[in-house]
Amino acid sequence: MKEDGVGNQYDIISVGGGHNGLTAAAYMAKAGKKVLVLERKGHVGGGVSTRELIAPGFWHDEHSNVHIMLQGNPMITDDELGLFSKFGLKYFYSDVPHATVFTDGTAILSYRDLDKTCAGIAEFSPRDAEAYRKFAQKSMDFLPMFMSGLYSPPFPMGAFMAMMDQTDEGREILDFMSRSAADIAAQYFESERLQLHLVRLVTENLQAPDDLGTGMGVFLMPGIIHKFGVARPVGGSGQLTKATVQAIEHFGGEVRVNAEVTKIITSGGKATGVLLSTGETLMAKDGVIAGIHPKVLGRFVSGIPEQVDRRAQRITQSFFSIMLSHYALKKKARLKVGGDADKAVMTELMTSDSLNDLRASFDQMRRGHMPATRLCAGSDVSLDDDTRAPNGGGTFYGVTFAPYDIEGNPSLWDEIKEAEREKSLAYFRQFFDGLEDDNIVGSMVKSPLDMERDSPNSFLRGDIHGCAPYMYQTVGHRPTPDYGQFAVPGVESLYLVGPFMHPGGGVFGAGRATAIRMMDDLNIDYDKVMGARV
Image (tube, rainbow, N blue to C red):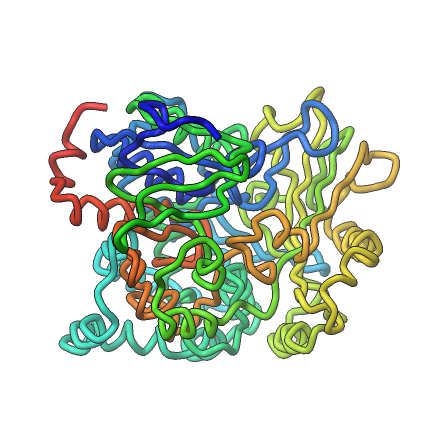
């Protein structure tokens, strides 16, 4: 064991080098704290990483591919950490954030430009074109009120509900939050294809179309698309991680890989340090940030009240996850539909234009089966970023929704994932040129079980968002009312960060909210810190 000394003493230790843990650490480092980030794996980033998985020069996003909800975060809009101005982060914003492509050679495109979007909708439904314009404008009008709470500690659920219930606008938000995506889409639009276009996008948040509480996604996404756009970092999703690490180091922090934490040390009911698998002890004067799911937190720390842990065990994961297919290509893959569809950052691929078929696919996954009609999305990310593949080649990213409990047995994934990859490849080939065998340099597939293995303390049951985004697991009740304010009951100075915390899964920059809570507890003036020069 390394002897205690100056090198073992820190203000704050962050357990886990995923996106959210790194974000929280960067903010605390900017606040002047001596910060150490510890990552079990040989690289940081968690779900926000880009690596050469198949062949040299082909850069694949291991998990996240598109950054959506991050775009409204002051971390991005105000460049609070200097990620753009000082550490080289660049985003590519397409004119076409979202497309739904059908096998009959048609597509619905959501342009950044609202007028162009409505013109496309008018080609098959003039009524819906006007309805969409009003809906999207309302969404954009509501965004400031809603999004201001996404990147800070949330209101307690009771206070939030009471506040929303005071105005017509607030009551409308509660209505969207309480109903299903399919219900909201059907209420506002007559075209089933347009309904499918909107609902299918919401399902990317691991939400089934008929699940109550998913309607808010249908309402919010048009506003986000037209006001902020969606984007990929130039060079891949992991460039956000790279810039955040540089920020931490710039502010005097340290990031260590191959450093597995086995225990969070407590003294007098307070988190005071960590124990590594090597036997090394590291001390934290002001607190520990843990990217550890509440369901498994008790394995790492003692002192959590029994009833708090018992409620944590009831956290609901999504009943489905994703299977990722990665392909390195000699030449780029392009959509057969042509036109502007290849510009889309998010591309949904549909062999049916029936909402009932979509529902049936989710029902099959709920029962542990791969759906007869696959739910796939994907694109060649090198089309708008030549850094992602060498010599004019392509880097294809394919998503297939899939249940974790495949036929009631998650371990079955190790036997069937290559066969399921081939089935998804056949599906992708209906939409893309360039995925023929003679154009493929190599491939890799990651099953829902592999997702859990990648992040066993966060992606439980393959749920890359940590816990299902149902109404009872949102705002101050995410993931439970006990943990909704990022602190751990019974263990002072221990804070949680991760996709299972508010505001939810995906790339949010959610560690900012954890940092705000920590600064409040440490009597640090957040506004003064953010006003300091980077």
